Length: 269
Image (tube, rainbow, N blue to C red):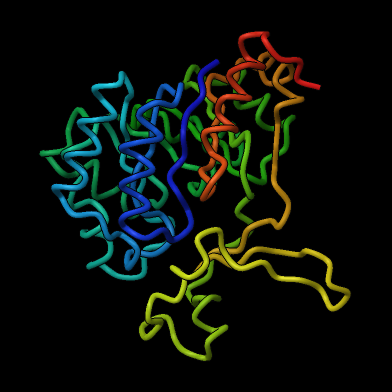
């Protein structure tokens, strides 16, 4: 069972992103790193030279690097822009059928690994069997799929499975931006306010109880999702990869704890 690092779903300043990948992730014991913007293309602030530098550093440390793509495509321009640096990567995490269609028709991307991302809504064995014609390298199970369904999918396919093992769960995506609405503005005129909230905006009930996290067009669970106590159950269904979702400050510590549990150096309880 391998540890992999998901893309950052929140909005981080460019300097923080570069520091995170070049100084922290290079030293993390993870086999695969997903890099790219999944929530809003306005946040894709790394240049081609930035990507080249980060990818080179990660690959030099023995990691496979995949490009993660937008989960919600609103126009053709976004569709094309989300793949403009794809040739630099070992493969592409597909989060939209529009991106899948474009990737499979682009001759310059032939031979690149395809990972079916968590927003592809592969909910059952029939859907997985249909997707096998694209020869996916891996399936990241959707956040809302229950254990028994994942077990059935695992039995019916030889495609390796990956699951979110730590992080805030994605519960919804919207064409409107929740962060922009907080400031009484639109998504097109948002002034990139999300950068003021690098771990998203915590939403509370009227009783001041944690409810959700608003992250641009995404809504996440307020509570952290952690499967460290279920590792044995996941091994039983041949789960290949555990996905750690980056947080602004504690990612390195989380990766270390999971690796200690996987190696038997730390009791998962």
